Length: 150
Image (cartoon, rainbow, N blue to C red; front, side, top):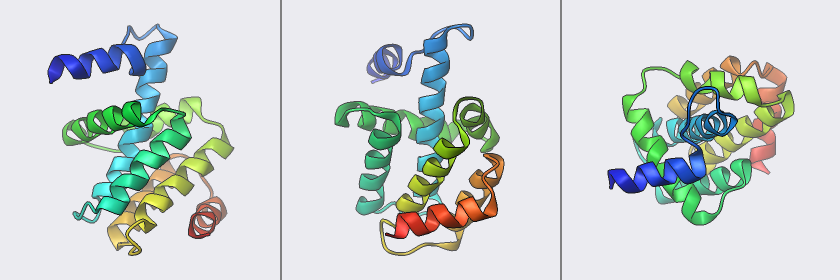
């Protein structure tokens, strides 16, 4: 299992030295997936529709295929288990994403929260914290929520 994860990281996520652009891209992908997983797990009830939405969001935001998205999701879940804060993920996104891309990511976070048709207060809290750390304005936060509802 560990060697399969390492091979995926090397091929698709781009584990490399800190100077390597592909390594930076890999850390960004893992950070985006980890933020989606944070919302998935926020209410302590991981439903099938929410998990499917996380996979769909990974595919949409990162332009990955189904198998790659599933492998990245597994890696992100492992990373979340070891993480201690959101900053380590949002800092990667802040360095690489434009303001519009950040708003679209916040929209995807809302889609995950809404996938089971119940937005738990913990899910909303995580999304609000991520939006703040990504420097998304309150109006951008609300606009992303409204777009996700449609």
